[in-house]
Amino acid sequence: DADVTQTPRNRITKTGKRIMLECSQTKGHDRMYWYRQDPGLGLRLIYYSFDVKDINKGEISDGYSVSRQAQAKFSLSLESAIPNQTALYFCATSDGGTVETQYFGPGTRLLVL
Amino acid sequence: QKEVEQDPGPLSVPEGAIVSLNCTYSNSAFQYFMWYRQYSRKGPELLMYTYSSGNKEDGRFTAQVDKSSKYISLFIRDSQPSDSATYLCAMSVGSSASKIIFGSGTRLSIRP
Image (cartoon, rainbow over all chains, first blue to last red; front, side, top):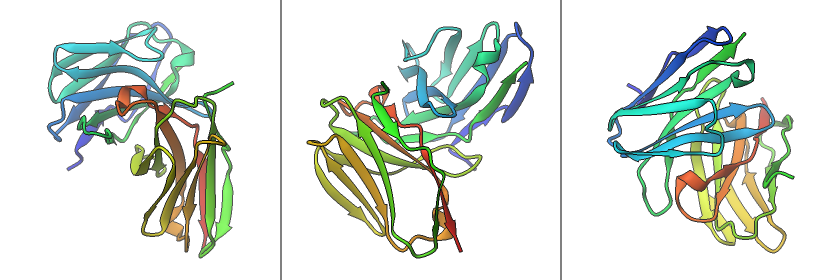
């Protein structure tokens, strides 16, 4: 079984709808991250969490919110989706080592019409 | 200007060739340099990292950092079709993953 899972893998939604992307991990890591990937722009950090009670904004948090329900679960919400939020979304975990190694999930492909 | 620049490719080479992938950057404070490999429909996976300047070798892969030129490279020797993927460079000032800046990725195709 995959260490980092994301649901759904693909989602089509309409402008203005609320949508939640979910991430679960079995690696036992405290640190979790949400990124979006766009062609030509690479990966950009949306939010990150170093433990259950710690939530931090990343580079592009506007229009997004997160919830860390447990050590193993970190969800990303788009309160009112807009077309420029169409992207590939990745969840990642890390072990917080001397040089952090991040482990990425398989991604969620989101299309906002 | 982006902090990290990476040619998007695509780059197509025959099997067995030596591949050179490169990134340039503008922030001289970057100390940690990473290369991620991303297969189609998958998340990125860390291939290797170097700290500060110099070379690091891991099997067929060599990472090279030239801080004076703000230029990093990944060399792949004896390239295989299984190396076909998108390669992303990434770098950070400190070791925290929350501060990593990623390049946009170079798509590489190895022709059998």
